[in-house]
Structure formats: structure tokens, C-alpha cells
Length: 321
Image (cartoon, rainbow, N blue to C red):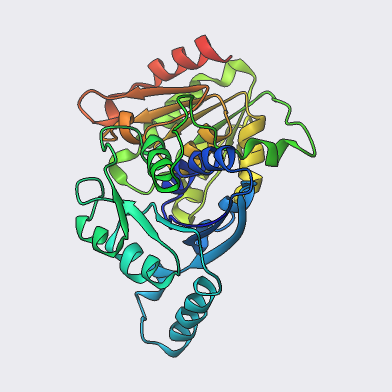
């Protein structure tokens, strides 16, 4: 059985899709999946044993210069790649007009997706051959697991979803927990940021614990913030620019992680890393950390500044150090 999965972004949403593949592979051991995904996240599907091929797409980049010659050639190459073979099922887990009209429509195979009551952009369901009711009041992982189960006609497992990627990182060399913490201090949305002063207060309060704190970063302004947080503190390390798989190994080796709501926090959940995630406006029940060793701290008034460094230190010490 060959399935085409469409889930292009974001990092957290992509990671939320992995357990559905594990379920499908359990139901159909001969099932393989090709995955259409934004080019920036194309590494993630390769970690799952059910994924046989990744088809990168660049909608975010293309839409800026849609008719430019180079972009036009890239779009033609993408169309050829997605039409290279027929699929037993085409499952649009994105549920948007762009994923349905610009991607799933191109593929050969029965198109599956949520109905008008189950997806973010109801019009997208017009392009599906089969439409399903998916309960929107459940976690994103469960929604995608349900979509796959209905699309491929197998019983949805009642156990917690398995992301299926842990073995990729441990099969050659077991990961050993070390005496360091990782602080995932960066997220794309300002309203999900924990104040820099709070991070600094927490870091300073851990000086006596004799434990290293590692600070990853992705963009230049995140690098500058990491440098400010580490300034003058020998036990705080600003990491170099790393590939996603390198960050994954560092997360797996940490004694604990403290994070804001970001894709890397979802990666930590997928790898069963001990993780305390700070939430403000996020609906934790729908898109919070899903998995083992995940602990949520959220502001009742959706204001990240209300979460005190003292509270996070107490939780950290009680659970992990």
C-alpha cells in the first residue's frame, strides 16, 4: 500500500502527524508513505520508518514570486514529482485550500480529508473524494490519527500515539542523559514569549546547582537574545547553529528542558524528553505537548509574564534536579 500524506507545515504540526503513520504501519505492515512537506521541514519525515520518499514543496517561498521563471520551473518539477506514480490513498492532513487545490488535486488516487465541519478552511473539502467527521475538540495528534484510521479503514488504537522516531536516534548509539539543561527560549509569536528578564532571573537562580544550561537558537535575533542571557555566566552555553537532527540529539541528552510553545518543544515531546513547557494563549488540550514526560505550566490570564521564574525553578527542582 502506498499513501501520499500532505502535511506541509509548521514544525509542530508536522511532528503531530507522525503517530498517525505509526498507527497505519501497525494496521498495514506493507504500508509506505510519501510525504509532501515544506522544504524547511523535509528532514523530519525521513526519521520515520514508514516514510519511503519525501516530496519537498516551497509554497511559502514560491508565493512571493509565483510567475518568476525559476519558480515556475520548480513548480513544474514538483508537479512531475507528485504525478510520478499513483497512490492507494491521498490524505490531506493540512485541511487548507492551498493543500487541497494546489497539491492534493495534482495527485492520482482517491483524495481523503475532513468534511466542512472538521477542517480550518471548509472549502478545501470540495477537492476531496471522501470526507470524514473529525472531532475538533481533541488534540491535534488524535485528530490526524483519526483521519488516517477513517481514510484507510482500520480501528483507531486506544493507546497513546507513538511518534515512531525515537529508534532513529538510538539505534546506532544509546543516548545518555548528562548534567545539563536546555532552555528553548525562542518562539515565532511574541505573545508566546516568556519575558527575557524572567529567563535571566531563572538562569541566575540556578548558579548554585552546578549544572550547565544550553541555549539553542535559529534566527539572528534569537542568537542575540541567547548571548544576552549567557553574558558573564560560565555555566551557560550558547550553542552554534545546528541542524535539526543535531538539536534532537542534544534534547535527548538533557536532564530536563524548559521551553515555550515552539516546534522544538513538540520535538522534545516526540522524543520523550523531560520537558516543562510554558504556555500563555495556547490551548494546551488541543496543541500542547503530547507524550511522556511532558509538563505544562500556563497562565490563567494568557499572559506569559504571569508565570514566575520562582515557580519554574521549584517545578524543575521537584521533578528533575
